[in-house]
Image 1: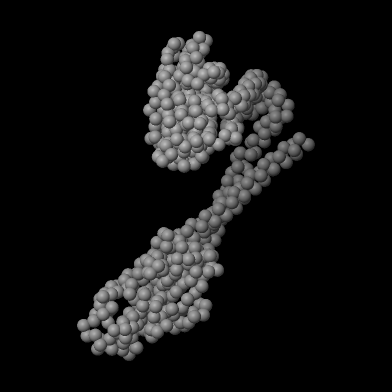
Image 2 (image 1 turned 30 degrees about the horizontal axis):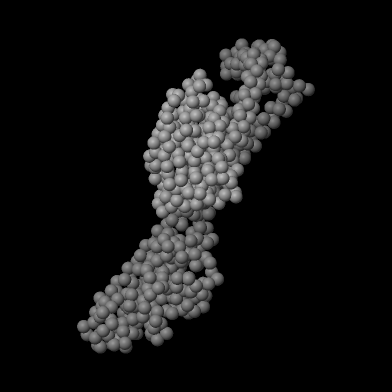
Length: 595
């Protein structure tokens, strides 16, 4: 019974490997077909766009060979109902166009048809102007027909459209020999034919994109439409358009792709059969015994029984014998490590739970409800803190001392992790205590510094920027304990660095004075303060974000709300840092004084 079970598992493994190889072959074939078909389609589209660009340029050059081409466009447009043009005329005698040439030369012997500019044409009487317009139109359409035939374009035309893209006024269209010119669908449209595209968003977007980007190719199924922008005539856009029918080409590419995919799949099937045969003969059979004992150990965790069962096999010097020896040794080591792993896991789970709790406590200690003072319309404020570890040493705070004074705080404790977080919590309490009955930031920092220096056996320190805003006047009194320079944006300006007066860091020396300074904020002014984690953000090349990039990020979003400004800066930092690990806590605060 045991032998039958083993053989069943053995065959199941072989069957599973076969199924996986079959799935791999199918997936590879499918991916090969899809990727090759997509690549072919992209190549066709790119080549079509390149060919169309050449055709559009050739048509434009053909038109602009006539120095008076702008006059011609206007005349063809304005006199389309009165001009008697000959379509698809050959450059030979006997055509009506050639007769018109002879008549014009008889009237105007000195007039050079191909080289006349607008001044020359304007000097002609209206009858001769019409002859000139009819002759050049016939010559142009004949040349456009040649361009269409040479480049195998299915439809080639030039239109005028107003800036609302509601209609197309056809100037000229290329035609194959024997094609019918008329005003019905799929006929070659004559001069002056107007087509409404008001309900055709596809055509409107194609023309709009061509005007915006000079040229635009858009594919729809097995057709590709291309528009090239030729310029503006009297407030109308002139566009050269063409359509390519790619049906036959795409069908041929599809057939070739299928053939290549089938050959690749057949090759993989042959290799897979050879691979499975080798696995069956040289790997799976000798592994049966080892497999039985692996399963036995998985069920019983009895290393002694495994050692007894594999004793004979482990004496061999083949790879299977060495595998048996390694497995026996592994089972013995596993039993030795299990107990140690249990102990380590329990310790880590306890530590992780404590850190999670500490992170939640720290997050709750910072103001997190925005807007914090919804009834106060004189200002808007937003702040964020992103620790480098589970908990951090940066913090921000803001609170109303009274109805007319708002305190703003941002600070950075030396170090990181749990010690810095504990020191940060103490510092927040000290700042609040120092603010009681006090409106001078400098004196508040002196009180805080005295308390820290009195009980600081680990000699930790903290940088602090503290400001008190008199809400009614916009007068902001501030003091800095070795903190980063603020950035200030006046209502009619951009963010600039404010090189304020720095004091010594908190905790370095007792009795150190801290000086107040004043910022007069007008309605619309914005103040941005931060910790050193912002300018010192580091990317994978060990480059710092720096003050200049920080100002660029601020200016990029400076017209937004404080929240939008911080989100913009955060986004710029993420783009700059990339996949590099966060080096330091990142804390920011922005105040918008509205008055």
